[in-house]
Image 1 (cartoon, chains in turn cyan, green):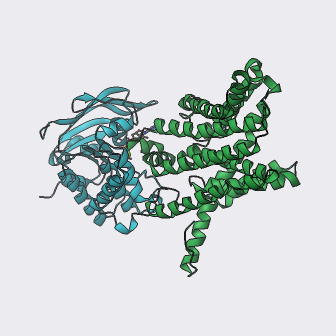
Image 2 (cartoon, rainbow over the protein chains, first blue to last red):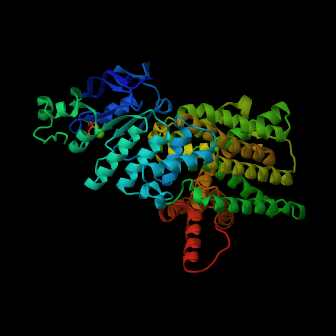
Length: 251
Length: 326
Ligand SMILES: Nc1ncnc2c1ncn2[C@@H]1O[C@H](COP(=O)(O)OP(=O)(O)OP(=O)(O)O)[C@@H](O)[C@H]1O
Ligand SMILES: [Mg+2]
């Protein structure tokens, strides 16, 4: 598959929770090898969209296509094994397992799974190094990690499944400015390792620097799509963020 | 938080402690050669409860699905043997294995329904299912003998029961250990911590839950089957006895759920305790059993094995050397 081809397509996806329409007829494409930002105010449906793509929720309308094939409504473990990995906004680690074992789970059961447990352990250790997880904390229980460590572990566990597409739900959320810079570099590194990345973000400055293209959700509907510069000057987007200052990318 | 996961660093300690268990259990081959009476009987009953606690551990300790109705598999095994032996003249040993298989299949079927239900609702549903099976055993007289039960041919087989149930205990412990070390162990422990996240990272949770439930049921069924030919009489109340579930849970929790050692230590300690209590306070021993469950969960929720490890580590820190970890 060539760079720039559509990797993941969201087609008219609608999702309701009772009377609340969390996603309204959302369509966009994620291209092979790109780093796409998904932004929007609180409650605009970003996480819900990831949950629909990964099979946690079944949409009430619309389709999700991976490499042109429909994956709508498949079970999460199947979608994972087809090469879509994700992280959780609020880390959902296996808290009574060690940090390393959390990553081992991804390696054993994901797309790149192999029967050899020893090899999967080595792979997990390498990935922890890749995300710069402190070596001394590997055998610590995941429930005892700091937020930054948890976020790194979330990334390592998702990467352990050998995804072609990574959906990262606010990997920078709650981090301090120094940590954000580190995490931004990490996301870039992941994309540069050949993966297609969709990143949800609240930190405007970071996403404007990081993403090549941005999709904006508001109240469950897509209100804009384009390059960071266009998005920063888009009337609808400025309105949706209601006075929140949007930073243009620095040159 | 207790370290209940699959800490790689502790594998060496785990291996050593398992060799100790194997050695201890091998020593248990000897007693029946020199003794025939009360103590052999007591040991055999300890083995049975311990095997049941270990079987419960495989589904409930590992995956976090607390099966309150687990005694149903003991009952299914017991009735399978009762029916096969009395109506079809099967050999008792073969019937016990078939009793295990009957429980295995029942668990696959019931698991497809019950294991969709989460948390306390699963615990209650499994209990209700066990009680339904008891009612079936009472009503289907043509097959089960109804309330009168089934009388099996006399065997005078204390020694045979002793060895059969010891073998069952060894087998269920070996399987529990193997599962814990395998990818299935990772799957079950991940499910216990966060089932949705487990699915997100590629785990087919339905498959692993049902498999663990069925393997667990197999051993409970074999134990029930051996019990049937040993006591040569079963009725719905002794085969589907909810006290058994309480024993399994208390033993496993006391020793440490999710550990291989826990149910063994818990099973031995608790069955002995029960025996002493039952002899001394026949009317209140169930109250004591219930109360001790509450106390254990309140004060040592991670079980005695975890505590022993901590004590040994602490002793190591203050300079007291202990050769091997527990
Ligand atoms: N399981 C659910 N049941 C009911 N309502 C839900 C559920 N999940 C999400 N919602 C609602 O759907 C809307 C979209 O939520 P979602 O979590 O997708 O927003 P978000 O864009 O990720 O917000 P944030 O930036 O705060 O993470 C919200 O109004 C939320 O309350
Ligand atoms: Mg969100």
